[in-house]
Length: 275
Image 1 (cartoon, rainbow, N blue to C red):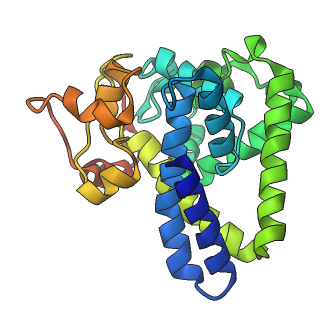
Image 2: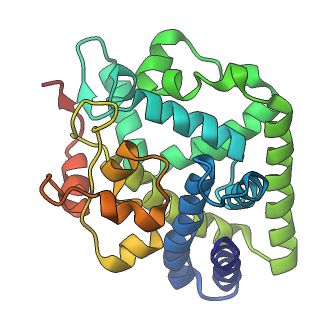
């Protein structure tokens, strides 16, 4: 599936560069989310039962984000450990928060700007890990404190090699597919908006609980297939070692299951005062 989804992404990038920009960019925003969902499986070590195959599938998928598998694992497992704690309550304004920063971060999530910081952060870390350091208050409010918590224990050499692999693969795609920068940017902008909005819609205004602070969102079967059951996010947080194929079995049909659009449109009204 990873190879097929990646090949489809390449085909859509080519189409976007050769006269089918709008349609190809919209399609890319869906298919590259499939690749990201496969990266997410690799992060949890469940993309393949063979550890080495799992890692190489993850590195390959990470190149389409683009980022590093090891960095994504550090950030994502940090998220699981701190979900809905004070470090990850982007939807609520607390008395000690900086309101302007809170709103700036919130709308950067909704507009896709949040995506930019992932590949940029990977590149900066590969150059010098110190470039990702920030003051403690800023780190806590933005969630960086939880995401970066595992970086001191991360294998810097592996991260740098993975970033180099990602750069090599992206460069090879540009040359082999005769891509245009404008088309590449349009495709990734569409993907960024699509990906970024989901990353917090599945948590926004949910319970302030590390394990149960997420939603099993209702979407169309087509969307659920493209995202590989990523919308069953509460089931994932409760059972992080269950592959996407079986997540549906762990969805509690008696619990609240809001529509994706219900949460998404509520998010546009901005962060709320902490209850």
